[in-house]
Length: 100
Image (cartoon, rainbow, N blue to C red; front, side, top):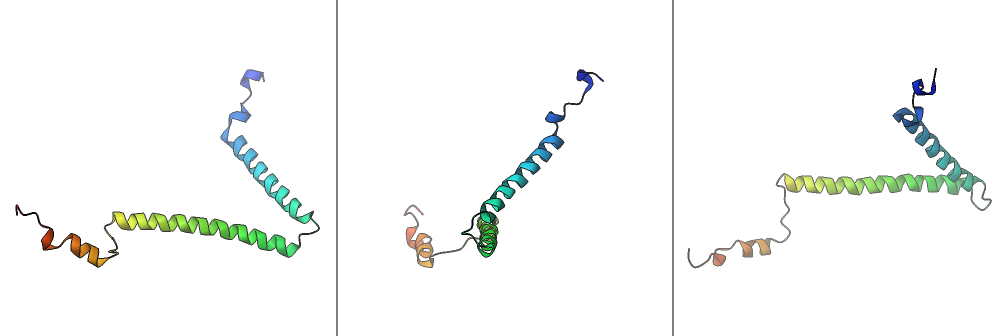
Protein backbone atom coordinates (compact mmCIF):
# COMPACT_ATOMS: atom_id res chain seq x y z
CA UNK A 1 0.00 0.00 0.00
CA UNK A 2 1.36 3.42 -0.90
CA UNK A 3 1.02 6.63 1.03
CA UNK A 4 -1.64 7.87 -1.38
CA UNK A 5 -3.80 4.80 -0.72
CA UNK A 6 -3.65 5.10 3.07
CA UNK A 7 -6.84 6.44 4.68
CA UNK A 8 -6.50 9.90 6.18
CA UNK A 9 -7.26 8.95 9.78
CA UNK A 10 -6.60 12.38 11.29
CA UNK A 11 -9.33 13.99 9.20
CA UNK A 12 -12.04 11.53 10.25
CA UNK A 13 -14.77 12.37 12.75
CA UNK A 14 -14.14 9.10 14.54
CA UNK A 15 -10.51 10.06 15.21
CA UNK A 16 -11.40 13.51 16.57
CA UNK A 17 -14.29 12.21 18.68
CA UNK A 18 -11.95 9.65 20.22
CA UNK A 19 -9.27 12.32 20.74
CA UNK A 20 -11.74 14.68 22.45
CA UNK A 21 -12.98 11.84 24.64
CA UNK A 22 -9.41 11.12 25.78
CA UNK A 23 -8.74 14.81 26.49
CA UNK A 24 -11.97 15.15 28.49
CA UNK A 25 -11.01 12.16 30.64
CA UNK A 26 -7.52 13.62 31.10
CA UNK A 27 -9.01 16.90 32.33
CA UNK A 28 -11.17 15.05 34.86
CA UNK A 29 -8.16 13.00 35.94
CA UNK A 30 -6.15 16.20 36.49
CA UNK A 31 -8.92 17.68 38.64
CA UNK A 32 -9.25 14.51 40.72
CA UNK A 33 -5.48 14.30 41.14
CA UNK A 34 -5.43 17.93 42.27
CA UNK A 35 -7.97 17.18 45.01
CA UNK A 36 -6.48 13.88 46.13
CA UNK A 37 -2.89 15.11 46.21
CA UNK A 38 -3.74 18.11 48.41
CA UNK A 39 -3.35 17.08 52.06
CA UNK A 40 -5.62 19.95 53.16
CA UNK A 41 -8.60 18.60 51.19
CA UNK A 42 -10.59 15.70 52.61
CA UNK A 43 -12.41 13.06 50.59
CA UNK A 44 -15.65 14.52 51.96
CA UNK A 45 -14.77 18.00 50.64
CA UNK A 46 -13.95 16.50 47.24
CA UNK A 47 -17.28 14.69 47.22
CA UNK A 48 -19.25 17.80 48.27
CA UNK A 49 -17.54 20.02 45.70
CA UNK A 50 -18.26 17.50 42.94
CA UNK A 51 -21.94 17.50 43.99
CA UNK A 52 -21.89 21.29 44.02
CA UNK A 53 -20.60 21.33 40.44
CA UNK A 54 -23.40 19.02 39.34
CA UNK A 55 -25.92 21.23 41.16
CA UNK A 56 -24.53 24.28 39.35
CA UNK A 57 -25.16 22.59 36.00
CA UNK A 58 -28.70 21.65 37.07
CA UNK A 59 -29.47 25.20 38.22
CA UNK A 60 -28.07 26.72 35.02
CA UNK A 61 -30.17 24.46 32.82
CA UNK A 62 -33.23 24.99 35.02
CA UNK A 63 -32.93 28.77 34.49
CA UNK A 64 -32.61 28.24 30.74
CA UNK A 65 -35.63 25.92 30.77
CA UNK A 66 -37.67 28.46 32.74
CA UNK A 67 -36.76 31.23 30.30
CA UNK A 68 -37.65 29.06 27.32
CA UNK A 69 -40.98 28.14 28.91
CA UNK A 70 -41.73 31.81 29.64
CA UNK A 71 -41.08 32.69 26.02
CA UNK A 72 -43.23 29.82 24.81
CA UNK A 73 -46.10 30.89 27.05
CA UNK A 74 -45.88 34.44 25.73
CA UNK A 75 -45.83 33.17 22.15
CA UNK A 76 -48.91 31.03 22.84
CA UNK A 77 -50.80 34.10 24.09
CA UNK A 78 -50.57 33.41 27.82
CA UNK A 79 -49.72 36.82 29.18
CA UNK A 80 -49.96 37.75 32.84
CA UNK A 81 -51.64 41.01 33.69
CA UNK A 82 -49.37 42.59 36.26
CA UNK A 83 -51.42 45.61 37.23
CA UNK A 84 -55.14 45.69 36.50
CA UNK A 85 -55.34 49.43 37.21
CA UNK A 86 -52.80 50.17 34.48
CA UNK A 87 -54.69 47.96 32.07
CA UNK A 88 -58.07 49.46 32.88
CA UNK A 89 -56.67 52.98 32.49
CA UNK A 90 -55.11 52.06 29.18
CA UNK A 91 -58.29 50.56 27.80
CA UNK A 92 -60.89 52.83 29.45
CA UNK A 93 -63.54 54.63 27.43
CA UNK A 94 -62.02 57.99 28.46
CA UNK A 95 -59.02 57.36 26.22
CA UNK A 96 -61.02 57.15 22.99
CA UNK A 97 -60.03 60.01 20.68
CA UNK A 98 -62.68 62.74 20.26
CA UNK A 99 -63.08 62.03 16.54
CA UNK A 100 -64.96 58.85 17.51
